[in-house]
Length: 76
Image 1: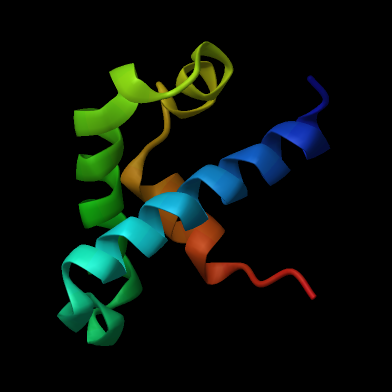
Image 2: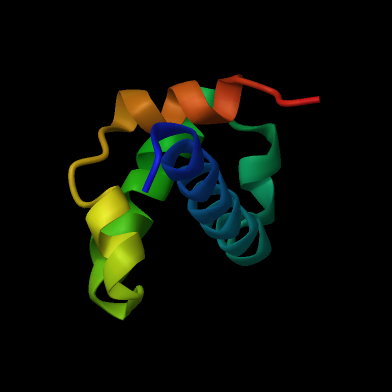
C-alpha cells in the first residue's frame, strides 16, 4: 500500500470512529481536538480486534498525536 493510500485509509478509519464517538457522546462535538483524539485513540484500542486485518495494521501503532494531526488537517 502506498503512503498516500495509507494516509487516506487512516483518515477514513478515524472519521468512522469520530462518527461513532459523536453518535454515542453528542457533547464531544464541542470538545477540543486533543480531547477528541484521546477518545478516538481509546475507541481504536478497544475495537482493533473487530477491524479487518488491513485496517488493524494501519492503526496498530497510531498515536494520539497522529490522530490529532489527522483531525486537524482538512482536505479540500
